Image 1 (cartoon, rainbow, N blue to C red):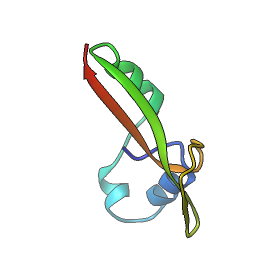
Image 2 (image 1 turned 90 degrees about the vertical axis):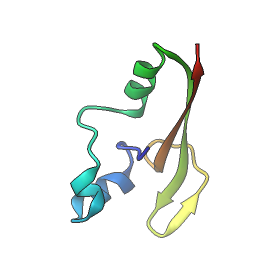
Image 3 (image 1 turned 30 degrees about the vertical axis):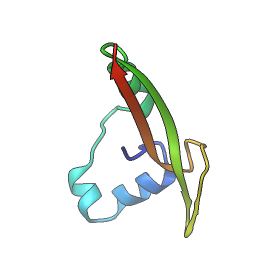
Image 4 (image 1 turned 180 degrees about the vertical axis):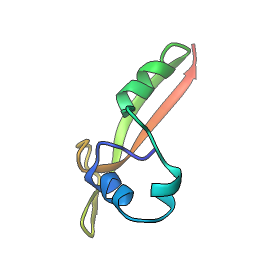
Length: 75
């Protein structure tokens, strides 16, 4: 999922386009979504794909990473 805590995501919301029209996580964070899923699934999550300007990295810093991946299996 897009990481709503990242500068990249906030920048996408500020521009007209697909993300602004179709992607919205009001009041949700990756950790809140992971917590909700953990009631039914064994879940792990990690920040992926650091983006700062034109640079892409393997950062795991929440403010830099454009994506948050959640992996789950049935309990």
